[in-house]
Image 1 (spheres, rainbow, N blue to C red):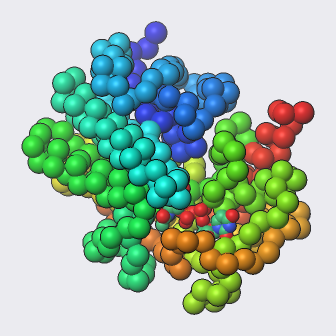
Image 2 (cartoon, rainbow, N blue to C red):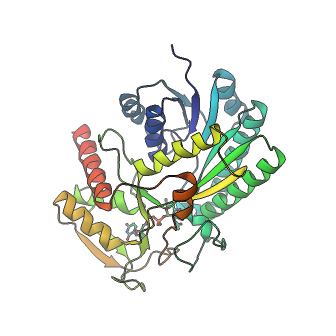
Length: 345
Ligand code: UD1
């Protein structure tokens, strides 16, 4: 058996984690997926294994338990880095149940950092979010844009996560980290073998669209038609999950090959394009041929009017940019939804 470098992917059974595992395999890494399956399904493993040409290991572990967390680092050798996705991510839920978010998102990160020190693993990629910018009016947002207070405990765990990692890299200078601030990842793998798998009623736009189109939901509510935007609906920077996954491999290789400029770097991952909710719906209707049942309703509490990325830093420093279009995103999301339906039949 080849002695390939191994990468631990926490939350590896999730939407972004599963796509990143596949890209790591293409880059010739073995992957160790660690997930407690609290927001994912074991069936995802089969899909990941189908798409990976390298070894895929799976550990069903709750990383809040420090000993269990350490046990993975003890079990496997040749670990070159950790990509840390494992976290709760529902903005609304975090407002109603803040302790769940602080307990999980912060304690798990701390356990990972302790493990990095204990087992002398130098490289960490952290799953951050554009939510760290808070209610900003400075558009597009650059990595230097001042972080405003964020309304949700979920957002605060991402701000705190970055701050904790920063202190960590100051205290342990041989350890390096990159925080990747995602905008809105959507779409699915072009094979339709893996994709987004929301448990229960989706909170996010794209799975709600595809579930409505396939008949699982009656009607999509477009939250707010009175924003100060060209068509009145809110603007986001949607990015294809495969583009996003590839950025993780680029960032990880940057750390592994000591190409990073600072011990903790932060990059926006978006396309730089502001897309409205109606733009996404139009693209979906174009690529699927389905006419979507939707209605404009009142604004969702806590939603921002508009946010999109300045992508200059990731382009010039990380040497990465998103390649796939909005139509690629809606097309692959639809293919995945149809595949899911076939599996259930
Ligand atoms: C939010 C978070 C992001 C988090 C993500 C995952 C912020 C700024 N962003 O993204 O960090 O990672 O959730 O949970 O906090 N919409 C509808 N109808 C729907 C669903 C959504 O109109 O049924 C609209 C929303 O109002 C929004 C857009 O679609 O304008 C995107 O919403 P969503 O997919 O939920 O993502 P965000 O809220 O942008």
